[in-house]
Image (cartoon, rainbow, N blue to C red):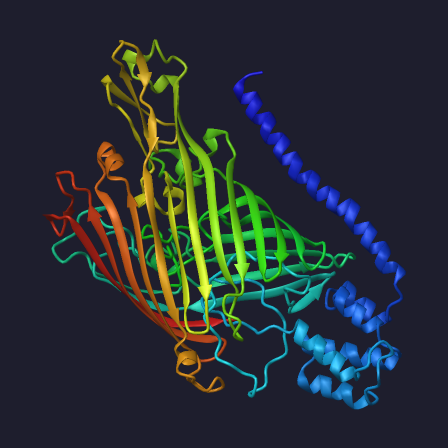
Length: 628
């Protein structure tokens, strides 16, 4: 069997393994649990609420443990109030019709104390949305009274839940045919000024991509296309140990329309584009063990666990130390809770991406960046991460801390037709040529929230990190050392040239392609000003926070020299001030300095028409965000 067949067989076996896991859980676990639940006599209304996912199995145990139907109704009303299903007025109407609390047969405390214990065990603080890009499902709780209110600590932006998503983790706004729907999103308008934006973009890119006029190409934009819309879904399975959820999310960061009715106004006519679209299964064996599986497009577990908190959302620090990506993927994970500590390994098969721009004259441009040389490798891209989570600061309103390690392994391949091979090499390569280079990377990430500050960051390294907005967007270079009689042939997508040459022994060969090595990272400190200064949590000054951020991304100088690249290192220094008017409206102001340092090799690139070692862009952005 040849190598290609072996690779295909391996991939089929790996995919079959994932499917087998899901089938075994669905067939073996669900019926057994369903039979157990069927054997238990429940209050009819409680049983309906259990099937809809409003009540949990633990709630049912509490309700089944009381002595009389009146006590069960009382306790169920309290549970629904604690979950936020019943408002204060609705609970008061029910409480007026309920008899006075009686002693449960199985306990020596009044039913009110039993319900109070249940409240403290199930209620969680509603965490504020620090950045609208973080759209993790929020827990449903009753609103806190003014005497209980506190100024929340700053919550890191987290796209991946540890311990899975609970059955009631998504609070639906409405249901249809057993499916819960919870729309969310935000509307954002920002004014943007850049001291140097040579490409005319409304977001910062690394420098030395092109020369500028003497004024450095300053730009002013007003942008609404960062606005976002999404829907969370929840399906209710008869087995309460299963959580089945999904999400579709979009923004308007796509390209601008070019049509007859938009030719004069395309700059304000951006297209909607898909961000994430996935379905997810979580099986909760017990309170300590959870199995998770996801299929669809989501944030990559390599590099995307820890994100910068910025007003600028289009690249979100990409090219300046903010490594991230979203990919189609199949992902599995497992969480185990120890005493005060949770650990979660995750493993994913992702779209193999490359990100090289196709030739403008090539039809493959219609399919977008990176659609050929990653998939043309005919190999799976493997990603993984390991997360540890614990409560660093036990104070109220502080999220758990996390340490994360992630990595990936992939490959890209460029192919060329035999008809495109130069005449001197036709006899050696009559059927065409191929050249490949590896892609790999690692990260170490930290998220450390406390009542006084939140420190987040990551460091990373790897080879060919262009797809993840790293390595100064360089991908690979052809290593022509020791070769003579060099010639090039364009790849099928026109994105790169394959170099041919003659080695020292006189043999005609393809020059090996080497990935550009890269390193970088960021550190961000957030201060909850209102909490630090003990501002009244119910007043208008309860929503002040400030962030300081430094990021760096660099490509290895030795590789850039061989590539004859111009960029070496890019850094960002960002300060952000947020004021939250209420839980729906936030005003932000951000001042940033983006810098790119040129490669030391001469000739230096041009900036303002002069050979320069450094490019700078002072980026200013401010505006309101309306969250729903």
